[in-house]
Amino acid sequence: MTLVFTRHPDAKRYELRPRGAAAVHVLRGAPDGRPLPQGHKPRFTLAADPAGTSPLAVIARKDGGRLAVLTPDHKHLAELRLPPRKKRWRPTYEIHLPDGTVLRGREGTAPSLLLCLVLLPVVLLYLVALALSDSPAGTTTAPLRTAWKQPGKPFSRAALTESARGRFRLRGDGLDHRVAYAQAVAKYWER
Image (cartoon, rainbow, N blue to C red; front, side):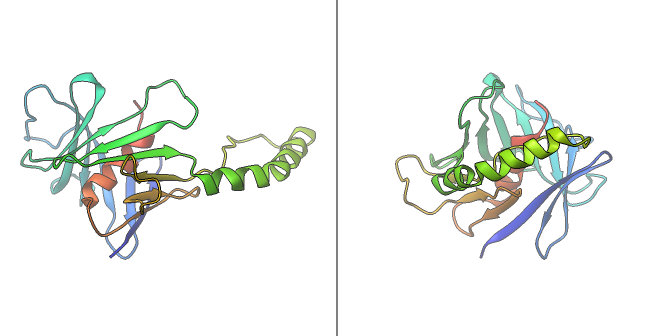
């Protein structure tokens, strides 16, 4: 079974909306009354309700800037490694599972880069039209897709993908949905 969800950040709350299921709420810090293991600093919590009384997972920063995805009773689900703050060409996001499996996601798959090159003339015309008009220019980004796969297996199916429109798709095998939610939030969360 495939899980599809989208991110919905706004000024008051941040949530993930899986298709056909209840929203997952993203809250700053750890839930009240739930201490974290030694050496972990709380970043955000994934909860089934807006108040955070029924947490699904707690994401905490570990030594070296890595993010640990923990269950509410502190069982280790995964470790997320984000790229450095300075933007590089095709930043790499990694998910390290407890069984030793590593999933690596790089922004810009070959089809999305090709699509970007094909659409470049249209984008340039759009930017010229914006420059000639009085409309404020928003942030324009390339329509790139990210796919998390095991290193060394470039032709295998991706465990988690993000479309250019921000829709995440999780295949039913190998990756816990809470880890996929945490990766979706961590990729865009303020560092």
